[in-house]
Image (tube, rainbow, N blue to C red; front, side, top):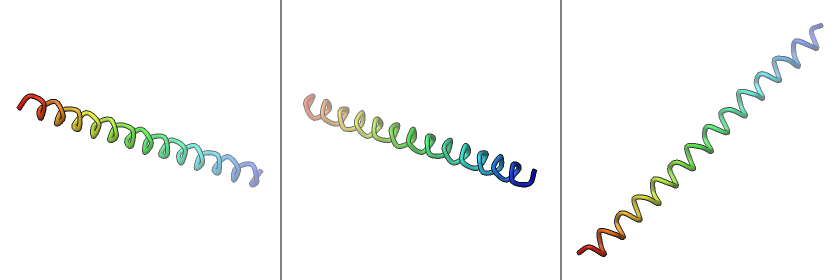
Length: 49
């Protein structure tokens, strides 16, 4: 019984860790996209001059 509870807890911890990892990866992807857009915006402004 105790062993089962421990593995269930471990499972919860791993699930939370996986969610955190996914969130971080999504944030990184958004950051990359934002930088890309910013860069493209600068490029088009330079062309307009």
